[in-house]
Image (cartoon, rainbow, N blue to C red):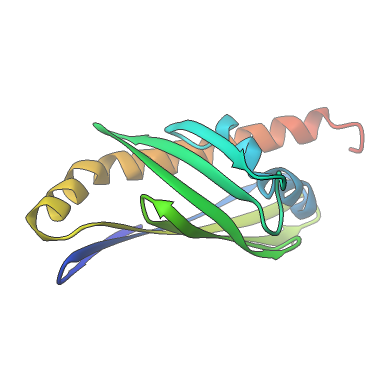
Length: 164
């Protein structure tokens, strides 16, 4: 689901997605919460570097770039909430204004649900609305592709894990 809201000088976009995979909840958390792995499954990532001495977890800061259609958007974001094994949120530091919430829930011993909410802000006025319309199909494609890739990576990694 994607919603675009324009108010005054800014255009806010909200993307909500829910998916499942056949792996244990904690196995999924260990992979997803180490956001350095995102380059392997998050569609459109052109750059993802750790900023500072903390590679993941509370206090981690990342500098990233994502190609959405004709635009490459750069952002610096940080881990704001870290509640293993269920909740991870990223906040905005600078660049492209994006915030996200990643919530994991066990559905059984070997299945989990991932619910993702992404909020980002575009410039206001006609230009922001136009950019929103241009990148909207790419965002929807990116979310679907990322979900499929993440599920396959998790299930493959779990099938190959010695702890299984």
